[in-house]
Length: 323
Image: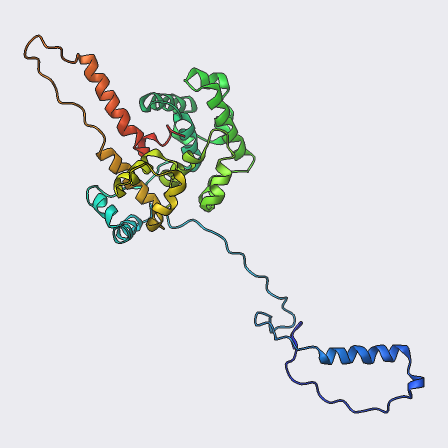
């Protein structure tokens, strides 16, 4: 019989022995008889089905349920599966899907590189950020050289010379130190579930919840991320369902619940919906007399404003710029 197991059969009758006179009963024997009677009166416990039948095998410990990331959207067939699910789950979204080409989720950079790029682009117009990023790569010697040790070797003065503010320099160094110390690593980031990853990345200076959501969608291709605080996604949901007001972040989970487990793709289509509704640049005005017409400078400003609107709702470009 295995260790810890109990028999469910009735105890075998034992031969009776003459009881000693009550006057001769010792305290020890009385105690033993009482304990035996109590044991016989207790109900038997059912054997544990998980208990091992091998007496030399220790009982198995219960396994912990671990959350693992879903299959990335960059995997073959995942975007098609997401679109099929969203079409069936949300007829309103199906019309938006039909109006746009399917998304592609591929990131050429490792997680550390993507996070560095995100920090460099923060709070800058796209063209200015791209220029800073280009000078940063030149300072390090190319994309292949972007690593924690190389970033830590850059001084705040060197970074300031290429247009990186002292605050952003401290963000870059904080990220690199967490990698160098082992708190973060590319392998750990890829394997973490969404909730744990968000908790770890927001420990880095300069990386907030919005940046984490964009990183998970566009760098890691996580399938079920809903950036509920993103204004573009919220305005897209308002348009999609004809709501009177832009939904609050706290309302987004309920409104978009039908998109699970592909809320990342649903969010992508919200950005496309907003982009398609962005105001178009005015047609060229041909002067026909002494009427005042926009100067070339005015036309350039209008184009820049239009481009800004598109960039603000296109995280594929603005991922590094709105963290």
